[in-house]
Image (tube, rainbow, N blue to C red; front, side):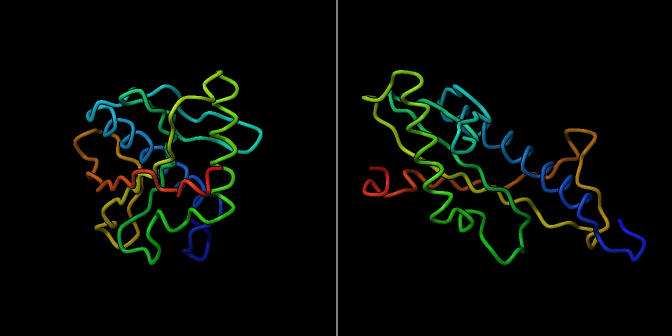
Length: 152
């Protein structure tokens, strides 16, 4: 927090990174409970990063995870615009080529993670030292989030 009581950019970025990491952990656990095998996390390509690569029933699933606090004006999945979609598609194609899986069925899913709003008016710290202190997020799975025409 800066001297004027406002959140500084360094604090905000740490907060955002922490929220994103915790969202990815929650999404991975959620997928595993539903029978997905997580093959890779934070897989870097020349076109960007894939949050997760998973497999279920013989289909590869490239997962983009978006985390937000409830009450924000933009739903998490709305932040996956045309440019991000192009990066996801190119990154997925790069992964498929690198692993010699070009003929495998695949799709791109989005998992939207909404965390409960801060109960203390923005004065809380967003890390939870003990697991039972962590609020439970709401997860929304958007299957095959990009149209087939966009993937080609």
